[in-house]
Length: 195
Image 1 (cartoon, rainbow, N blue to C red):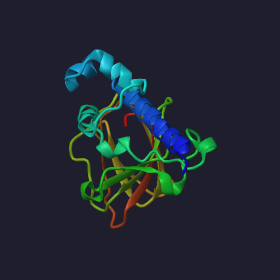
Image 2 (spheres, rainbow, N blue to C red; image 1 turned 135 degrees about the horizontal axis):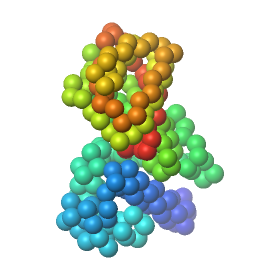
Image 3 (cartoon, rainbow, N blue to C red; image 1 turned 30 degrees about the vertical axis):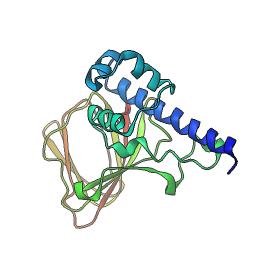
Image 4 (cartoon, rainbow, N blue to C red; image 1 turned 90 degrees about the horizontal axis):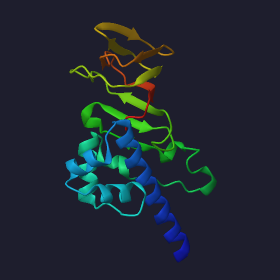
């Protein structure tokens, strides 16, 4: 690959990383000053990272991941081989994976990036996996069960869903579990993005 193409690819990765960090900060309604304080960095440095002018180290990325509550792997795997597909298309083999099979939940980002007003995920829940502690986010969420059996508790009420069923809720407490013997696959939409 020519040096200019390598440099262009590196600049694109840096731009995507900057956009991800900015989108995560905004989704969590944090200011540059709050992020700087949590990271032990200046507001100017955080601003430069969000604009792609400074590149965070791996240690910085780990701290960003901890502050945002996301896996550090989210900041990698921005490869999109066809230039005119960047920010528009996500190929099945190029999805960013979030989580591990050890947790019982593996999610793949179906959206091209973390910008925009919503994100779309393919969530695979292992048999018996469950979210034991109730979660609540300042988001509107919807899901479609593509396969398997999936239980979701919304505001204290459990609902058993099967293939083809869907749900939606807005800012309410929720938990989930897979009561089946097979993985449950749910296409999940969250607005605004939380990853």
